[in-house]
Amino acid sequence: MNKAELVAKLAEDAGITKTQANATLDSFVEAVTKTLKGGGKVTLVGFGTFSVSKRAARTGRNPQTGAAIKIKAKKVARFKAGKELSAKI
Image 1: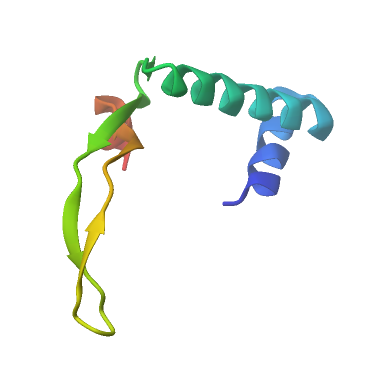
Image 2 (image 1 turned 90 degrees about the vertical axis):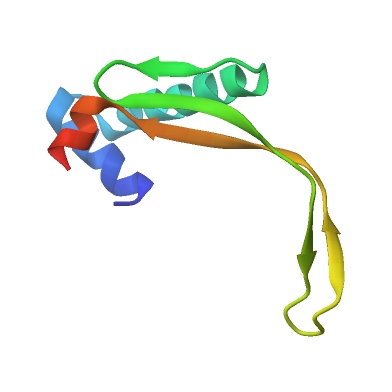
């Protein structure tokens, strides 16, 4: 499912226009992004938790040449499915 299909489904289920559903989805994504950027986490009971993890610096290999390369440390977004979501899948 892509964003357009999700927006159409939200609009149909909520009885709102696609424009309103799109604005709602954009607002949700922006709120989650701002919270994660600030170092917080977002928990939706029954669905899951969005959080930030730190990935340590490490040494990798260039697949073409086999030469060692340094990969910088970085922060990555993480999602852990909640108990109810996991049970439904």
